Amino acid sequence: MALPCEEGEVELWGLCYSVENTTILSNLSNTSGEIPQELCALVNLEVLNLMVMFGNTNFVSGEIPDCICNLHKLTFLDFGWNELSGEIPDSIGNLSNLTHLSLFSNQLTGKIPPSIGSLINITYLNLGFNAFSGGIPESIGNLTGLTELYFSFNFLSGPIPVTIGNLSDLTMLSIATNQLNGEIPSTIGNLVNLVSLNAGYNQLEGEIPESIGNLTNLDRLWLNFNNLSGEVPNSICNLNTLNWSPYGFEGEDSYLNNNQLCPPYPGCIEENIGYQDTLECSDLGDLNGDGQLNILDLVTLANLILAEAYDEIADFNEDEQLNILDIVILVNIILDT
Image (cartoon, rainbow, N blue to C red; front, side, top):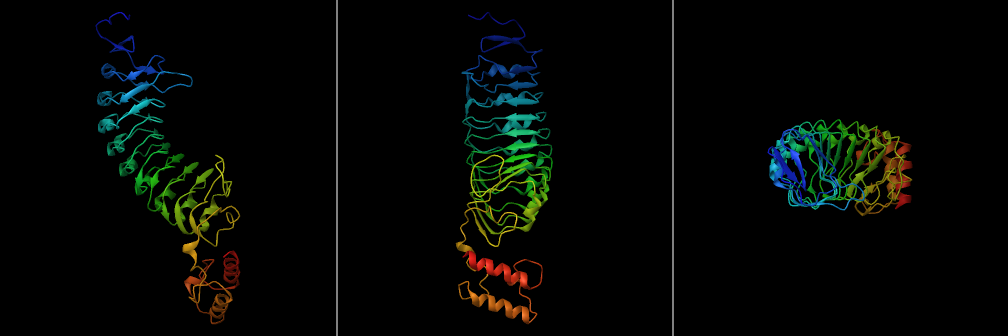
C-alpha cells in the first residue's frame, strides 16, 4: 500500500508528485485506468507524455479530463497509443503554449473543435487513427508554425479548408483515409516546403489544381482512390523528384490511380497513371459532336488548321494555336479509347 502523500503533493498511479516542482511526467510504466483529476493540480507541468511505449501493457482509458486544459504551461502533450474515448475538450485551445500535441491511435470521437486553432505555437499535431467526424475546422489555418499535420484514418468529411494554404512551413501533411470531398483548393500550392502530401482514399473531386506544380520539394504525393476528374495539369511534371507508380502501397512512391482523370496525360506520368474511370471523358476529342472518336474528328481538326481558325476545345496541348501537335494528341486519344 502506498504511503499517504505529504502536503503539497498529489498521488498519481500509486506515486506522489510535488505540485510545485513537477514539470515533467513522461512515459510512466504504471499508468492504467482513467486519467485522475489530481493530475490537473500539477500546474507547473510542461511535459505530459503518456504515450504507450512498445511492449508496455498499461493504457489510460476513459475521457480526457477537461481540467487538463488548465495546465497552461504545457508545451508537450502526448497521449498516443492509448484507449481514450469521448471528445476533445473545447477548452483545448487554452493550451496556447503547446508545441506538440498527439492523440494518435485512440478511440476518440466527435468533431475536431475549432478552438484547436488557438494553439498558435504548435509545430506538431497528430490526431490520426481515431474516429473523428465532421469537417476540418477552418481555424486550422491559424496554426502557421505547423511543420507536421496528421489527420489520417478518421471519418472526417467536407472540403479541405482553403485556409490550409496558410501553413507554409508544413513539411508533412496526411489527411488520407477519410471521407473528405470537394475540390483540392488551389491554395495547396502555397505549401512549398511540403515533402510528403497524402490525401489518398477520400472522395475528393474536381480537377487537380495547377498550383500543385509549386510543390517542388515533394518526395511523395498520394492522390489515389478519389473522384478527381478532368485533365492532369502539366505543372505536375515540375515535381521531378517523385517516383511515380501506377499501383501499390510503397511509401516512397507516388500515385494518381483510381480516379476519373482524363487523357491526354502529361508525359511524366502517362506510363504510371494507373486505372482511371474515363467514362465521363468520352467527349474529349469529339470535335464533330457525334458521340464517337474517329477519323471524322481528325478531319474536323485538319479543316480548322487549314482555315487558320482557333477552337479552344481542339487545342489539346494548350499552346493557344492549332497545329500538328494537336493532331498527334488527338490520334493518341483515339487510339487509347
